[in-house]
Length: 292
Image: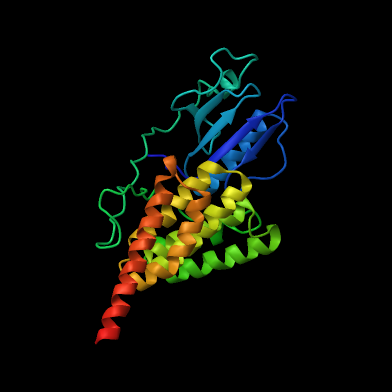
């Protein structure tokens, strides 16, 4: 069984032993100890009907990559990162699963999608462009029923993307009203909306939503999330072949890339180059119309 990369939970243990937990639908209060935090993740995994991924970080900064099953089985996966010589006892001994439990088989998630193609005549073929990372499936926000979450997923899997999008938009509105438009839970649902709009072929709407989410993740100081979401917005923008539509979104993408420029600012440079190409293309079309 492949355990998808989403949802991913982060457990951070503090010096007093309490553990804070972040991730889709995660409670915002700290847990008394790691066992309580694992039980909370397992409960969320049970709602999804499968194991989920997590990382656990000790007070000294050591991080363990884990898979947590609905029955609270915990399996280590991937490399351990952190200090070469931990200064204190880490989470690892307590994260080891009990001998009587059997962890479900797992495999690595698939590699990210190849870079999106650049529309002809808008950007040099040698210009680096971002890849479009795999987009997460719909999420469930605390206070909403499992049925709401299941409905979004079932509509999407059945191909009824409009109903799935409508329900996701309603959840976005409700969560935004309760927590604010930049709350992590709001942003997670908004990414779902963007994914569904892209699947439905509404690339301008998807680009706009992803761009909004990327800038808000940056506001939160979550650079990895900001980078990944900006890459999604940029890659979808490159797939828009209509010059006028792409040009209408160019200013927003360039502004986003001025804040989230990518490694070596290459993504920012690529966005500027495409914007210039679109402007030149529009100017040429206008000149031809004047001469006609």
